Image (cartoon, rainbow, N blue to C red; front, side):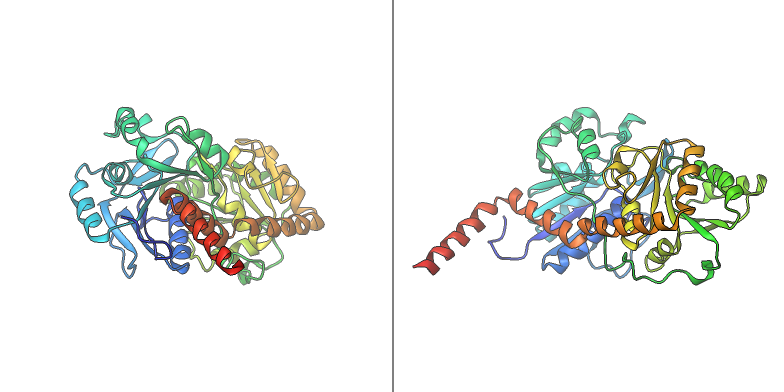
Amino acid sequence: MVRGVGSIVKIALVSPYDFAYPGGVVNHIVALEKHLTKMGHEVKIIAPTSRPIENYDSFIKIGKARPFPVKGTTLRISTSLRLSSRIDKVLEKEKFDIFHLHEPCMPMVCSTMLKFADAPIVGTFHASGVIPNYYFGWPVTTYKLKRRRHRIVGKIAVSKPAMEYAKKYVPGDYRIIPNGIDLDYFHPDVKPIEKFLDGKLNILFVGRLEKRKGLKYLIDAYKIIKKNHPNSRLIVIGPGIRFRKKYENKVRRENIEDVVFLGKVSLDDLPRYYKTADVYCSPAVSGESFGIVLLEAMAVGTPIVATDISGYRTVLTDGKEGLLVRPRKSKPLAEAISRILSDKELRLGMGANGIITSQQYDWNKVAGCVYEYYLEVLGKRNVIDAADDEEKSEVLV
């Protein structure tokens, strides 16, 4: 039963993905939990994990996550069919007012929670790619999805491309609420990384080292750029052991100088690397429904070159905060990056535009929009409005 108006709402944020392995959805949930808690609500994150999570009181483990390679990416999810007893125990203890499932049709934690959740369900759809049971025979068949999707009372998509994709499987009315960015971390006053301030022009890549992120095309583009800008450097940040070795071998084999692979960096250092860059490049080829990395670069004032895919067009206007180029093409990528590297005034102008654009996605605003939507789903909006009207009438009397 939902608590009365004015009380703290108890919220379950449910993720299908490995909580120990940060990615776009996990980072989104962590930030949402932080800001909803700051607003005064009681919030728990429910997710599988591949290793113990220490000193995180808001986290509840359900399921063990394992990696599954899927068409150029890796899904890290639980595949257990025996989650129901654990879910029952958690629900009995916590007594949630609302469930917020992220990728609600993804096996197994979210798809099982769709069946057992004992309060209204909101679903956020992040992806604009193909659902996993298209690739292999998950127990969550299309038949079961059709049986359970009516339980998703409120539907959120992070962008129009995500909404258009989700509607193929879960029809209905959607509210578009974008990903947010934490402007306490990402802002133009962060200090750059000193060791890379040696006079070279820095090109930055941030993302998982997997095929769909398109690093191969950026390395090929950088080989062209290096001829015209010998004082340039490519900095590569992101996890991925197998592909990192592949890319490092490519750089070594083709004798490409000044390519630095740094692996994963801390949240505190990440904004500093964006600040260090003269241009940020995201050459992703598919599967991006939004573009949070673009916003991170914008927030510190770094101009961008990105591929012209639907998710990136959601946040970046070509010629304003950066340049958009055709995906899977190294030469146009090289030309766009070279154009920005060659024009300091253009870099500064695009960087300034990016700072302004990023303000629209402040997590404080985004979390407020999510909570307002919760109120609508819980049926509180009319109650609150009526209470406000009654208070105003009493003042007038």
